Structure formats: structure tokens, C-alpha cells
Figure 1 (cartoon, rainbow, N blue to C red):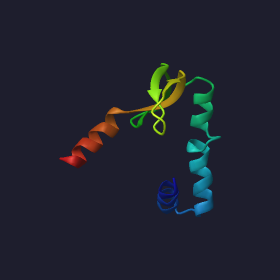
Figure 2 (cartoon, rainbow, N blue to C red):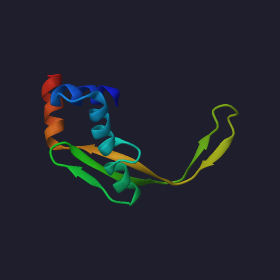
Figure 3 (cartoon, one colour):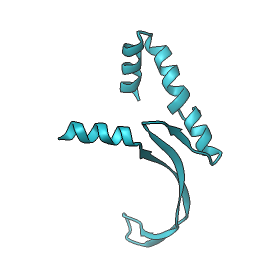
Figure 4 (cartoon, helix red, strand yellow):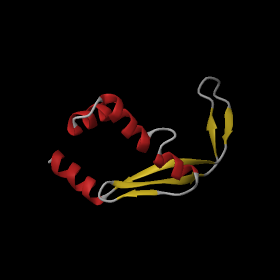
Length: 95
């Protein structure tokens, strides 16, 4: 997050504190994206990607310390799917 704040501050020629507020507005724990996901919604940033929630099924697991079998409860997790433009940009960079 600090790298993003620094990049925004440099690109927009604004103080780091203002850039931190701007980044926090979108990506912070109380930000717009998190708020929409908490409500069960999704956020689509055209050309960049799609933030949404996904339900993970309950499953059996193991306690790594004791080796005992445990039950892991179902949960809702945040998910990100990269958009077409972002995927193309990354694939061109790696060639």
C-alpha cells in the first residue's frame, strides 16, 4: 500500500498524506471497495478488474501443530479477477 501511495503522490504531484487519503478511500478497510463487498456487492473497474465475494465451502483440515483433524467452517472471501486489459499488459511485459 505504501508503494501505491508513493506512486500516486509522485504522479499527481500531491503530498503523501493526501495520496494516502485517496488510496485509503478506495482500498482501505473502510474504503469504497471493502464497503461494497461487505454489503454483498461487487466492484468492476473497467479495464483493470472485478472485485467480488465468493463462498468457500466447509472442509476438513489438519491442525499443523498437533496433526489432529479439524472442521473448517464455510466462509465468504474477497476475490479479484483481472480484466482483459490488465491481463494483456502483463502478458506483453513477460514476453
